[in-house]
Amino acid sequence: MEELDILKKNWNKETHPKITADTIYKMILKKSSSAVKWIFIICMIELGLGLTSGVLLLTNSENELNLPMWLETTITITGILIPIIYSYKFFKNYQTINTTSSVKDLLNNIIKTRKTVKQFVLINLSLIAVMMIFTSYHTLTMPMGVNNDIAYPLVTIKDYFILAFAILIITAIVIGICLFVYFLLYGILMRKLNKNHNELKQLDL
Amino acid sequence: MEKELEHKFVTQLEKHQNIIHKVCRLYTNNQDAHNDLFQEVTIQLWRAFPKFRGEAKFSTWMYRIALNTAITLYRKSKRKIKTNDIADFHFKIKADEYDDTEEEQLKLMYAAIKQLSDIEKALIFLYLEDKSYKEISETMGISEVNARVKMNRAKGKLKKILSP
Image (cartoon, rainbow over all chains, first blue to last red; front, side, top):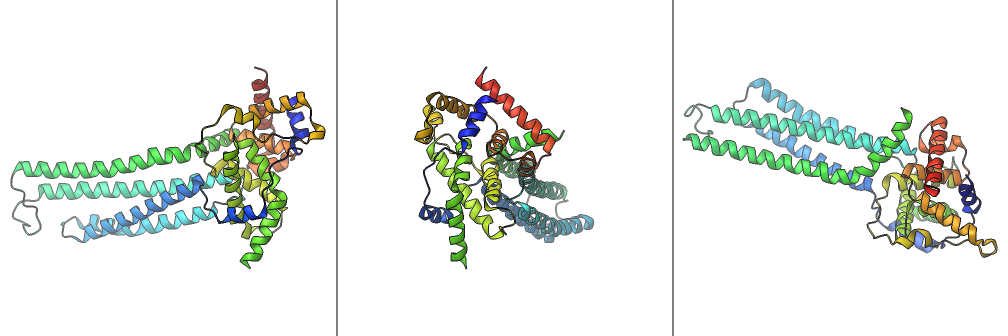
């Protein structure tokens, strides 16, 4: 291609304003504004939230909710295991993010790290949802007078509706915040990465 | 120790800075964005420098990090791009080799390259740097055959842009 060859011929003749050693010294002290840095920060926040919800699940399971034994055991075990496993996986993946890798490997590793945290958050949310369903069901169907010291002072059908409504609102807020983070923040941050990743992936098909 | 490492890095970077400038030239549209990307590449290089063991040449090592930064890490500046920025910004060829028609063609070529995807720009950059298909495939993480296919497609796209 003629025009490209003309550019190739002139490619190394172009002059650029020379950056002095002094400026380079100043540059290396500055903070990165890279997309990956932001993905990492948000992942850390998600991990933090996940760990907190894990702790909450454990604390809740210690309350006398009279949940079935198998459910309490399952919640306790998953509440401990999942954050540990996923924190380990996240840091292992994060360590493989290396700017000296090939473009494709770097993109793969960033996307893999992101997927790990996404999985972790979704599992946590599912656990919270299961907990909420069981707890709500248990509270709403608990026979009055049997466990009055911890039972909510619900006397009328209206009270039950208010409680069910409150649970729904809280669940909706939690899910709403999560959806906002996923669709807005990651949409912006991951758009370019996903686009470039797909372009390279298509070549292998 | 840190000072020594810093000095070594700055000396090498000062010497090879043209590689970063050339990457910025293809991936940015104005001087401010050029400076932003230059800075981001420098930060990424400095971060990776302690692991640089000198197995590859400093310049080869720079290619990867500079391209990776442009393709994966750099978030385009939100500054408004002026239409004349694309063709005119610091476009200078040594005076003794100045050729009016050629310069016009080069301007058009740069404008055409700006319309390519990030991946295609990387391939064209490596072509302009006279890299072999083996080196291109290693840098991009694709097979040599795919590098050829992709390169031909990128060249075809450029041709189409230049002569619609």
